[in-house]
Amino acid sequence: MTRTDEPMDAFDADAAFPDGAHTIGRWLTDRAAALPGHPAIDDRGVRIGYADLEARAAALALSLQRAGYGPGDRIATVSGNSIDHVVVFFACAKSGVAFVPLSWRLAPRELAEVLEQADPVLVLVEDEYTGVASDALARVAEPLVVAALGTTGIETVVPPRRGPAAPRRAVRDDDALLIIFTSGSEAAPKGVVLTHANCFWNNLALAGAIQITADDVVLAMLPQFHIAAWNCQPLLAWWSGATVVLERSFQPQRILQLLEKRGVTTMMGVPTQYRMLSDDPSFPAIAAGPLRQALVGGATMPEDLAAQWADAGVPLTQGYGLTEASPNVLCLAASDSERFPGAVGRPYPHVDVCVADPETGLVLAGEATGELWVRGPSVFAGYLRDPQATARTMAGEWLRTGDIVHRDGAGVFRIVDRLKDIFISGGENVAPAEVERALCLHPGIAEAAVVGVPDPVWGERGVAFVVRADGATLGQDEVLAHARSELAGFKVPVRVAFVADLPRSTIEKLARSRLRERASALLEETVHEHR
Image (cartoon, rainbow, N blue to C red; front, side, top):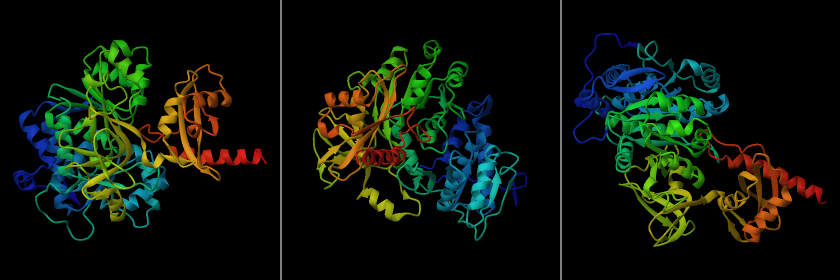
């Protein structure tokens, strides 16, 4: 075992950070030198300054190196948002190890499958998640080396690396920094490999679109197994010397209390979270405080919700991205939200995009609708241990997003739908998002989701899942009549099912795969009813 309290050489920053490298570990070193006592993190009232955070991360980095870990290795974590987790991230960044934060929301079987894919040399587990992690680890074919997070765990004793030691060399721009597993809503999760350079350019692009200074207080409430929990404000905040308030879960009243008591100036969330916050009676008074900007990701912000936040004095900055792009691709400045309602904006600095025909790959000029392709230094290095999936996702140097967009004459983009969500009915393409928007024009419909399922005559037909608005009593006939008045005949769903809520993934994205299974069962029932 390597103990951090044993005599050892100081961490060699010059060797770890060669001139000109975009390595992320040096950000903390530089900021600690400039603002040593300034709070870097506020974790449930416990604060740590930049110098102390740097000292802990550098000590752990050296311990990892002495225990044989280094470039090419992967360390997985099962942890909530915490100072201890951030220490491990920066220690990995400094030592050239890839940091692989795994979702504690997964069932043990799912977590075991991800661990098999990640194949880490070390797994670090926070006490709170020992149960699910232990169950998952027991299912993994080859036993993994496991340790606890924190000052009484990995920061005190580092288990020696199994097998030959990793190379001791300076960290390079092209070394893996983050490996984030995608949600797997359509298939098995894939590990997205993001390098130091990917994350450097992503944050440089973000800095060109929003302003964060050492005076800012950034609320980070998305779980740290998502890319947005690192690359959509927190890393930029630590680069800039701001204070990051870490929150472990989303509870609207507690978030509003944090906004007020911690003096939060900027934050990032998904539309569902912003809706729940604005529905709270205390929202208008708290929003009138120091909060000056809020970023939106994960989905397009509904126009009425954007207007509600703007009226409260907090304009929302709409963004679009995907993990494979680190994730930031498009951004709509808050000042443009009224001119381009429902849009996701223009490309970030240092990001190239084009609109391509998804079938032929032909790049479309001017105003066009097609698949969004992305190119630039923030595009990922590939899927972990899956070159076939990487090849399917790339078209030369372009990343195929799988999202259908419309680019207008002003160069502003709107998301039309996911390419794989489109279904073909009677030879016509149907975009579920378009049908859903039409359904939600009915005052009795709070939410709607549409999926395509196989049909022996039409190829595919749409099934709609509808959440009634409070107090509404509408039935299927009324919904279909409304749909016929708003949509072409081939877009009208063949069946409507009323549900209490729509299934969503870990960051509130619609889980269409689960709805497709239910829709197929509903159509089977319909066939039997008409026999």
